[in-house]
Length: 337
Image (cartoon, rainbow, N blue to C red):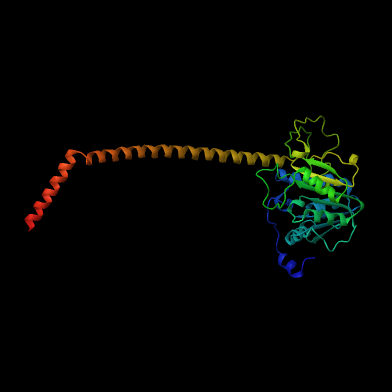
């Protein structure tokens, strides 16, 4: 648990550092980017399995997912995170009668008993830890026999511009799968793909509360969409994230999609910003080329002038001129003497 003096110090803290690793809707708003939708989709995938269950959300970050699972009907959800500031933030902004928060290293949560959870979720955690296998062993300790586990991992070989400075490990699908299976004998492996969608929709004005929590799993009626056109989805090896599911019948795991206009607008704004920067760089490059050309001209003129001076200094006239000045100098000195 958090020491009393640390809690007192953090009492006035109302924000978390935004590193790009956490989804913080209480601070940044809903669906601020594609990565926000990325987070939300994973919790939506788990939501059908938590009703009347005791759930562990390990590496819960800001705590929004912990409360979301409580709102989906879980009897109890425990959020765990190593960051004391994150636990304080979660306790303040994501309270729920069925939710509680604990500060702990994910490798070993000493305050939790063996076989104490029906469902465990841990999203985008394993790549941050010093000892990934020890972490999986700890999850096995905490999971009840016959319990269900959902764990995700980013594909840092696909992500641009590359591995995050906060990631201690990166995994190919085969590496993630093989590590998982050394601890859990079986599992279903899913690929999570970030996409852009175009939707033709009937008028729809959900409230903010519905968007954030109540209707997140089914934000629209089941028959709201007609036909869907799928242009391209990469293989699981090239997915943006991998998700391992343990203890769940394959037939119960369905495809999951989340839609966000805000995320699309953010993407377009980022592209516009990048385009403007590229135009600015092209303009600067043109100016540099112009200055280089002017410099080359000046160097040619300087070289030509130097050559003329050298030619003049070696000419007969120049030598006679130097001789004349020498004579004048001697004559002047003689007059003084």
